[in-house]
Length: 233
Image 1: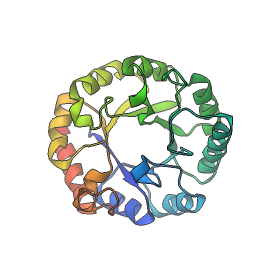
Image 2: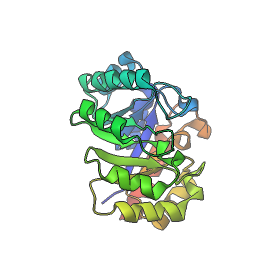
Image 3: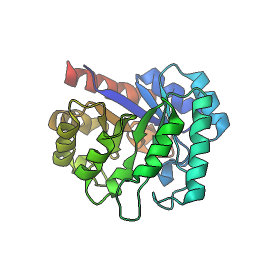
Image 4: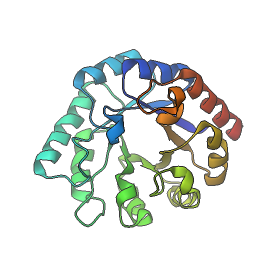
């Protein structure tokens, strides 16, 4: 089975380019330089209409922290319902408590609001006090189908051993470890071989000249797709 390739899109053109290059799924965000914030309703509608591959939309109201107050949570629940109404396939969320653990109660409410949408728990997990413990918590949530992680490092390439451990921990469950942040075209085949990940996440790595604010380059996406297919062939 080929490794799943998720690509960050910030515009309709990005979404089309990622699909043309062979991406399996999109993570739709705005403000990529801030780690990704909730995109506008108009952008969500337009991207869902523009592509045939699954669109997962980040629901993140601000970039101050992953610890949210009651008003933040209320906004997130409204956004989740709007994403579902727009016809997207999933949401990308993450919330922590004051002790740097998964905020179970808030996640439960988000899962209820998602009402069947696929859920990726994003890199908030990389700020938890114990990644393995946090993954165990997420494995208790049937609605959480992916966990995006860089293994607690700035780049997933710096955490290959730990990511490999997390892949083994999630093996056989309903949840896939989605490795992302800092992945490059040149390093992805070796990374997949070392970690045995079944899904990878690319942002800057498939953009023009590797620049975060540049457009997605479909040729770069196609290069990653070919390398992933060869690695799993």
